[in-house]
Amino acid sequence: MRLTSKGRYAVSAMVDLNKNCEHGPVTLASISERQFISLSYLEQLFRRLREEGLVTSVRGPGGGYKLARPASDIVVSEIITAVNESIRTTLCEDADRGCHQGSRCDTHQLWNALGRHIYRFLDTITLEDVCQKNIYLDTIVLAPVENYLPDAEPVAMEGARAAVS
Image (cartoon, rainbow, N blue to C red; front, side, top):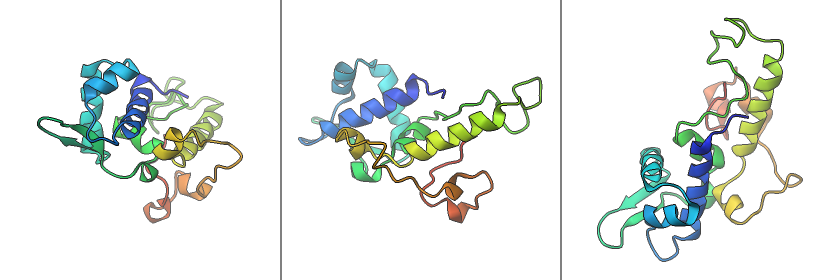
């Protein structure tokens, strides 16, 4: 799976925000200090998180950021896709360009299915689950696989946040 620091940092920052918001908005400077993420990088991430409706900003003295929805209503896949991070396990750029000089490699279907399974898993885990350290493989109930198939109708995508390529 190719998940760069952008996705990891976004999830870590959102966990930090949730854990520290009990006394009001949280500043990016405080998240930066606790998570060892540069302030300028956090500013970029939070601009995207705000645009996607995951956080809201509060201006002025005592300002900062807070979650736009309860942590139990935000899934990890939403955070990752909000910062334009793709959850891809294939080398192919898109459906037209394969990883072998324009054609699909023999293992493409394997890696593509793995990527969809990873996305399905992350689409089930809430921010609250991460904060409560409540992620146990034997208790996770995944959404129906039909919701994550490439030919699924948009109406049938309930529970699926976005397609995985």
